[in-house]
Length: 309
Length: 305
Image 1 (cartoon, each protein chain N blue to C red):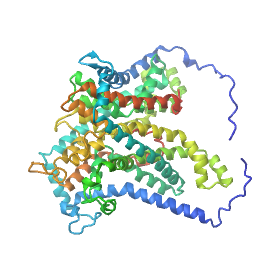
Image 2 (cartoon, rainbow over the protein chains, first blue to last red):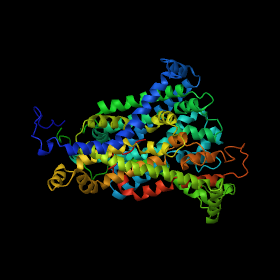
Image 3 (cartoon, one colour):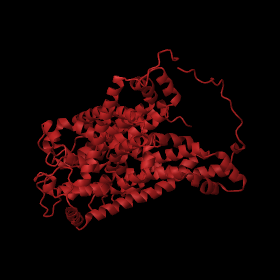
Image 4 (tube, chains in turn purple, brown):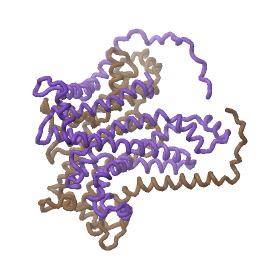
């Protein structure tokens, strides 16, 4: 709407400060200071990927091409696991985007300072239980015999824990758990991004007679696009890694929730189960890594969120 | 795009807006309850006996049991397998605490180096950091396990502490902080005064970086304390697991979830709720103390699932 500020014709290169003389001492400190992290990055970032790649394409040290992958695709548990994860990710990412944006907009519109701050904090607290603790808590909440919302559960037709965690309900249950623990952090991030929208723009919209809904639709949400995309990509990547939720529900339901429900569980079972097949396990890990890295690369190179350097 | 429309009378009665406000209020109340009710329930559950928790005598879900019952549950939990919960908590402290120390020692200087100095692999390091930072940490668990099992490190505390100390997100935070909030001129002035490079970092840059050090420490500790998958894979055996893994282990001792359990000493549901609460207590306390900075929105970009 507003013409961009005077386009800079040909980058002006201001003579750099005297500091730019090749300073050996600074270069040395650069190497020394980054070396510790560099080693960790190599050992726990790069090397594991290379080693997993090596394992995925070999068997007993011999190169076997895609044989491990073909074996994994042929595994009767692989197809259902992909379906389960895809189903969960679809429901989770869609509901996360809609609800987080909606809640952030409403919280941001609250004019009373302490009320807005308290609400944000209350939304964020469940994040302290991320991991197995939140799943444990939801075990109770999903069990009609002890749940404080038992009447609600009974309305959905479940009178026992095993009924609640029936296969068809699982993507929704995992979505609720993940939303309960993770949404607060995202709401705060969106809130921060909303704060960064200049008050001039908001004021202009108000003078033009735009109500809160129009302002949200035509100004706030378009300006949040980058953050929404970031949240979508990160949640997509994280969701595909589903492990702890089905793992604990499986323990608690004595197998009603299968122990090979998600891809990461399957990769774990293939390596640690009776098969003891590290090569196939690595193949599954590589598939999951490719998805995660593809999403990350897309964001680093196309997203422009990290244009700092 | 100028104000050609009639200006809305903001003081007048606008029924549409009131309906909107009511709706927004209802949504906020609903979700506040959604986020808070489970926590409130978790705080109350350990004060009850199993029968009270089941509401057999008509107890309300949000009633308070008694302190005696809380003490009884506490004693039963602490007595379970000769206080194994203390072992688990100790392991959690060792793993997350050790990682916190290494992370701060390694991450903050790395962020400084990336932001303030020039060296050959700087750009490569930066791009790799961004990439790995965006990969969910669960994606690397099995590859790291496969790697560490080659060097026979699985089962040692280092198998958890070292991967926990690799924290690219922290490096990114430190890098952004040093490159935007610390003036190079200030550092140059110290250099002119004759300070060596290390002195410039430790006496000038580091004291100014306290906020980002706190931020990196916070995220690192909270993420690691709650991590389940990595220690689950790396530390088999009841004496080496951290409390998050131990918590899941308790389930198999709850008769309700596992009627086949033959152990004579079992865990009741209120005791399980108490264990859940204890397992996250340190993080909850940190959250309460960091309340101000958590809600400020300064942490934008701060969470990584």
